[in-house]
Structure formats: C-alpha cells, structure tokens
Length: 406
Image (cartoon, rainbow, N blue to C red; front, side):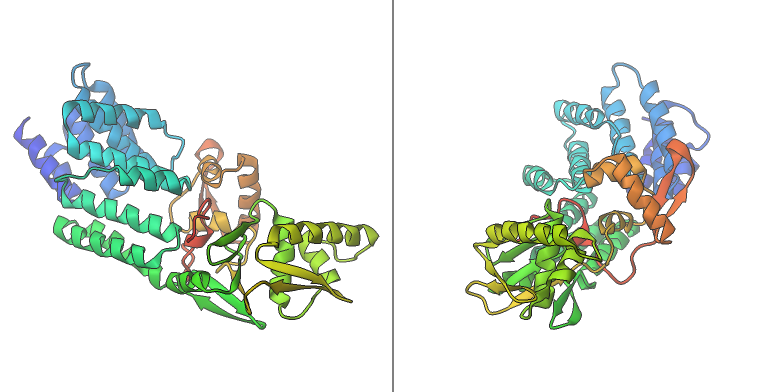
C-alpha cells in the first residue's frame, strides 16, 4: 500500500475526512475511490459516498475479496445512515463471511454491529439483543466499543430499562473519550439527553404530569393496575394483557381508566371506540359485545361492572389504576417517532420499520403533511420525508415493535 493511501486511512480512522481527501482527492484507483467514499460519508454527502464506494467495489479484482468486502461494509453503513433499509442485507452477510475467513476480526465486528443496528431500526429488538450477546469485540478499537455500547443503550431504552441504559451510556462515554473522535463523543452525549426527557404522561384524577423513562419503569414495577397507552397493554407487575392488535378494545379500556374510579358513560365509550357521535341500538349492541370481550381479556387483572349510565373498572388486588399516555397525542405517533431522528426517510423504509404496507405509511404521511408536522423532499422514487426532531420529548416508547418492556 502506498504512503498516500496509508495516510488517508489513518486520517479517516481519526475522524478527519478533510485531511484524507487531501491525500487522495485526485486519484481514481479502487483504493482511493473507497477512501474518498468514506470521507464523503463522514462529511455528510451520502449519495456521493455510495456512488464512490460502489465504483470501488466493482473495480477491485477477483482476488481482492477483502478490499471488496470492506467497500460493501462501508456502503451498508452509508445505506443505514440514509435510512435505506431495503439495501440488500445479503451483501453485508457476504462481507462478514469474507472477514471471518480472512481473520479480519475488527471489520467482522464492525459488519456485525451494522447488522444489529439495522435490526433495531426495523424494530426487531429481541433479534438485535440476541445478536449482541454473541458479539465478540476482543481487542477491537475504542470506536467499535463505543458503538457497541450505544447499541446496548438503545436496546435498554426500547425495553424501558433506565438503569441498564445508564450503565451502557457510561461505557459508551468512556470508549468514545478513548477513541478521540469528536463526532462519536457528540453522538453519545446526544443519546444521553434522552434519559432526561419526558417519555410518557401519567394521567390520574383528571391531571397529567410528565414522566422520564426511569419514572415510567417505577410505575410499571408498582403493584397498581397500569393501563399503558404507549404499548397498548394493561399490566400489574409480571401479569400483562396485550391489546396492541385490538384497537377498539384498548380504546374502551383507556376510557374506563380515564374515568376511574368513576363510571365511563356509554356514549363517551361508543364515540371513543367506534367514532360515533350519535348512538343508536346498533352501537349499544357493539358496545356490549366489546365489553364482554374486554372482560374476558382483563379477567386476570380487573373486572368491569355495568352501572346505570355506563361501566366502571374494578382492579383486582390493587387499589389504584394508573394510565400512561404517550408524550405525543397523535394517531400517527409511530411515524413521528421514527422521523424524530432527523434523518430523511423513504416511504418504503418507513413501511418496513412500521411493519405495514407502503399504502398505510403513505396515508399517515399525507395526514402529517396536512397537519404541518412532516415535509416531503423530492418526487417519485427519490421522495423522502423529514420531520424536525420532536423537541422536549423522548419518543422511545412510541417506536414500533418496542413492547418488550419489563
């Protein structure tokens, strides 16, 4: 390897892309293209970075498998940063096999971390946690240790475990300081601010107050009956009744919890669950059927009693009902939670992360654009969606597939 390539590589490793570009800016050989691509990625020009990395991978010869695998890994990282979740994961798996076969443990760990971060973006928290448990960092450099700790921090956040998140953040902060990379230290500090932001609201007796993640964890660990509007479930300690796939039943439960210890009026419950402002015998029949189903689901945790004007919630073995509400009041809160990272998302990437169809994601985006909460960039296949970060709130509990709390 020539001196200019080596110097550019050292500059990139230290987080100095401008110095790296000075060394290889006028060269067009595969190694220089790869380094220029990484430098452009560090400078934030992701489309140009992907183009350079793709050209570099194509130009490396058949016997230069290790160099090609490094280009594929860098391209995967750029795809992840630009929220292109449809980027073929097989290419990264192929690169990982090459690293393992050639004994390149550092790049193998890096590629593995990219796979885990993609799983997290897709909301597959259990798979990400299982993959992290098998991660062998060995004597990996501090920057990889910091990224691995940040991954652990996000998994702990998604599971609602504030203490584990704080411990992971401490490890990430130490490793980022040892790496000497300013951008990494800034990323760690930015992540740490999430712990101090309100993650949910506690509604009781007609009043609401904001809770941090640690306070949410304390509420969920209490012996009270908790109706969790973030995860759409009811729980008391280890007993959990999930209603995330039964929105009408959860709407009824939410209405009962809001009115507790008083009664929830029938008309109010019908409007909340079925959207009907004027009730008729058909709506009242639907309400009776819905309440019957909700009684069966809630039997381990609470009873539901009919009264003259409506229904009341009667928790078993617990004197108090607590209602956790999302920090953002919106039916499209999951879309806002994803966009709150400040990146430009495509409709297909949002649909993948939400586990829904592109048509469903598109309907949510149109509604959010009309409400002035989201804006579109570009047209057609190049169209991306962008939202300003939701100031003053942590949207962790609103992210898709994050119901592994507790």
